[in-house]
Length: 488
Image (cartoon, rainbow, N blue to C red; front, side):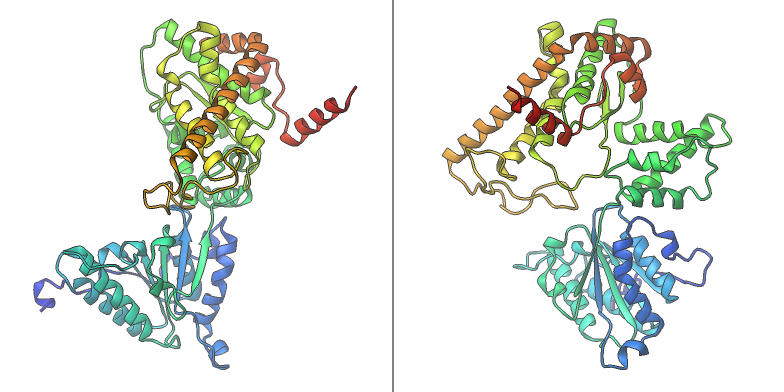
């Protein structure tokens, strides 16, 4: 019957033939070696299954790739198929589900049938969380269809022994919402985490994406890797493309390092926005951004200031771009305090110079408040509140909390303590920002004047204009404080 309705029950999976010139291998995958190494055994099994089955073992039926969007989960799955030299059937989980109940299950059956006919083969289901969420009471409409589709996937995975040479790879950025039946042994019993690339990984990824891009002599991929913490492989691919397009618009024959920096600024901060600002507005913006910049130079442990601009970009009238010297995986309290002090530097500078407040600090206040609240409610950095979890943890692969379901697991008295501690951290940081900017008022004035004249300054120009050295590292600053405290 389904075939009579235009073939609704047919799988929409796309087959990639590994004999084609566009085949993907592990050479095309960079920056995620840990995940790649986890899948080498899968490739080996598909190439030589007798090596493993002769002792009674079977290959894992399913491998779940977990990671943030853009980290290369789909590319990694294609590389596994390319290395093994087997057909690769790729389909998004959302393509299974239709309004007509039963279509998704029929498509699952057809997909596995195709894979069996072409075994050994790999089935890749992207965004499996769209149909693999934990099952509950069935509601009207799509939920019933979703559960039928999930049940059929579970049935199909139970239907082969692992000796057929069919391996199911699936990708998700929300592993915590998946149904437990998907994750039990015999189904997706292996979980491979695809992390964000570190500095060395980012450089390797940039080398892959610049293979066909003519680079100028001054283009340094190592420096670019240092300037792009937190960017995924997809982000870096987009960065290379934007830099190449920018160089082409500038009628250059090669892509220079400045093209990459300008492209990075456009991606992170947004495109330039032509606004006719008065001299007074520009001056206030210059002092606001100057406040952030000066604190980035004098607060111990602050991230180095890479660039400051009073050219409007995106929703911002000015931007101070700071980046860490190296990748961070653990954040001490002193570093978080330094971040908050720096965030409040724009408002503090306006108060010192003009004695008034404007709406320009809205984003800074939002970020500072959010960070201070996490310090109190998640990381136990308040003695008055204590080491108690008072806020749900955030999904490590997406922005947004998970866990408490909207209810507060604490009393109103505790809520008052939390608010009081957040206010205390913000007030102390604001006072410290004003103190430091007052102390370095001459550097602040010089920086504001230079910004009014040139609009954008890089790191070397900032240090030259202000006459200040970069902020000392936290360990150096703490050592100096201890030495000073020990003096009579």
